[in-house]
Image (cartoon, rainbow, N blue to C red; front, side, top):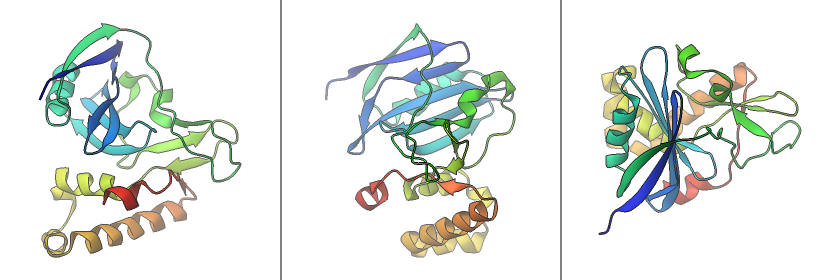
Length: 194
């Protein structure tokens, strides 16, 4: 299989890849050199987060290349350019505006200390906050953070992954509902990719 060329735009402490193919979908990644490490977030081409990894390393370009080596059959090249914020293809659940942005894009990466476990977005029109969560994201969260779960929970996931992810999803929904943060709806991605 021939390697494709993958362009990575570098804007100070942020790196954004061009779109690449993986697991029957188009994706892109953002790596951010924060005050404590490197945050790598993978999105669909429509801006839906699929995975987020926080690494205790400030070597962001190498960490991004390591992450991509498992996902993209590509050779990456870095060039300076202006960072393009993540703008998901979604509507605000409160006002139906299509001007949604990722909250972390409002911060200089050096100001990012604590990273939310679930990505948060905000409507530019009315300010309503949304969380973005798919079952794929939850699977990756469990896989990369087993220490967040008890031995019994991990055994439950081994027995019936679908049921465990559904239960975890319902738990997260209740937490955000209590905080009055709405779910950002992207359509039927979960139905197609689980």
